[in-house]
Amino acid sequence: MAVKKLNDAPPFNPYGVLMIGIIGVSTGSIFARLADAPALVTAAYRMGLAALMLIPLAVWKAGDELRSLSGHDIKLAMLSGFFLALHFATWISSLDYTAIANSVVLVNTIPLWVGLFTPLISKDRMGGSTITSIIISVIGAAIIGFGDFATGGKALWGDLLAVCGAICAAVYLLCGRNLRRKLSLLSYIAICYGSAAVILWLVVLFLNLPITGYSTQTVAAFWAMALISQLIGHSSYNWSLKWFSTSLVAVSLLGEPIGSTLLAYIILDEGLTWIKFIGGLFILSAIYIAASGEK
Image 1 (cartoon, rainbow, N blue to C red):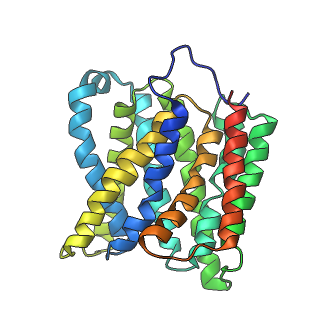
Image 2 (spheres, one colour):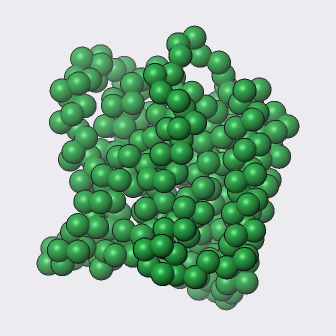
């Protein structure tokens, strides 16, 4: 069985929270499109504003737990934040070198890397349904990007960055799975998001990227990404890590391109092709198979 059973019952329906997470993170690419700013600046504002809203609440509601955390737990949460920041930095940077399709497909190999790393750094064990769902989900992601791939030396570097982004996201999820067994959501994400924000802002300042002078629409997009995409979307996934295996959460992440495609069709009037529809069916099937294996 892929998931480890817990003695306490979840306060909310875990599948419902996971669905909220999918919807939340699906808005990220829409808001990023509306933000007229360098990609790394957008990521830094996303994490920075999220941490700005979150940390005071965490100190108020979970201050005692934060003060009682062991050095090991704090370091592991900061390590998770480091890999979250590295995920954003490498994946977003890949868009400057390779086609969006290449980047999306390769960064969505997260379930594959989770499957490879799980036996090494987690107590979770994968069953046949989990392995099947990982394979189907990666095929679905490849179908969505099929036909739009770019080739060449520059594209190859971008592809490598996207793969690094997937690996970093897998480690971020696995660290979160280990910590969420014993830490509250507020304590974990306060340290994780705060660490990621500091790292991304250091990168932005080091590269001397512009951090002011943006339009009202761009600033609004920054806040929307922080609140909806990060605090609601990513935090729903992090909450789910206590109740589901990392593999299921990773496979569910692939619901993002489906949600993003539908939102782009509705909000930005972008085309919805049969290829994307078929790829989406593969991913939805993979999520269903993975979820069935958790029961």
